[in-house]
Length: 451
Image 1 (spheres, rainbow, N blue to C red):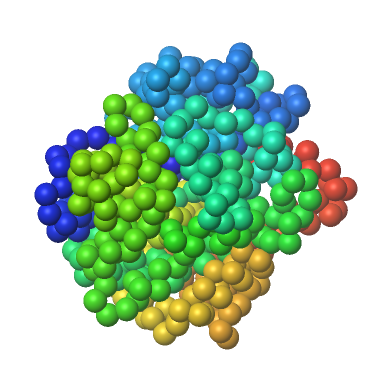
Image 2 (cartoon, helix red, strand yellow; image 1 turned 90 degrees about the vertical axis):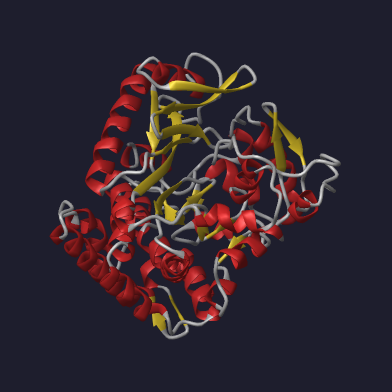
């Protein structure tokens, strides 16, 4: 999850909220690709999750990475992240280690960044008897086994999750995702890319599904991580039907975010409890947590990180539908979305592919993707057919980018072509192994999924 923002003066007029988003508009030559991924740390001898402190711990891994040139980020006395250039390493609530990669020009550069990061992590972790697992949900661990990271944001969120949904703490402590972040050129470009991203997010969920186990047994889904998001908090999650209505733009997105209850305000290194309070009241100086104060732009930036739709707008668009996987899948995700969104012909074709879907079908596909991956369907639309078409459009978009001078990155789509060719994804393969050669022994997943 995001680190607290800083900078920006007091908000003097509500139009600054939309203007903040609009500042993300860039010419096409400045568009970049950001890739984020989370991974579970575990003790290789006991297969238990990493504690925060101790000789074999999250803190020990962070300290080891700091010794390799990363700058520690602290909350109080606790190290809760690292920074190097425009990349960050941060902690999810249950100790999942996240790399938020720098904005890069190509997936080829992303591959180099990822390989460097994983090599550094292995160099630090292996002597400690620590491994990392690339999968969408913790396959065995219970909630009681999970460590709690020393971050004020997570303490507040944990308290709130039980009030508003059924699966919020599962999301926080026992899931991992891979995410691609892409730019837009104008408000109209943002709207078109957001609509395509939302409509095709179930395809990403299906293609990258890798979480068929939970608490030691099959859970009835191919992506339990996706199922969890449907039981988290309806006020801040979902497929954003309003984004497909006339009048969609930065202002309309701002209106939705303003209606999402707050979590916190960050001041002087501490998180102030504003659970359930209104950012609209904050704009008027009427926030109970900080009476008389008005928000800064950094407060707005923080609030934007507390909404969790399937595709999220900040000063770029975040693709949030995929389970974490192995190296090939981590790189396939930004290749898929860059191919779809960063070539005009491909973007037009992607919109033609999904513009006829109604709200019910989009939501139905989201559910079907979590349950059956590529074998799911809704409203007469088969996810396998939609995925095959989408991967083909993405390949065409990457080919066009190569003709325009970028590296030819179509090879990064190889695992996705394998999935649509077989109609099966990683979750299906894991279930087959569990029911076959593993003989129901889920400890085997820590070897298969190790990064």
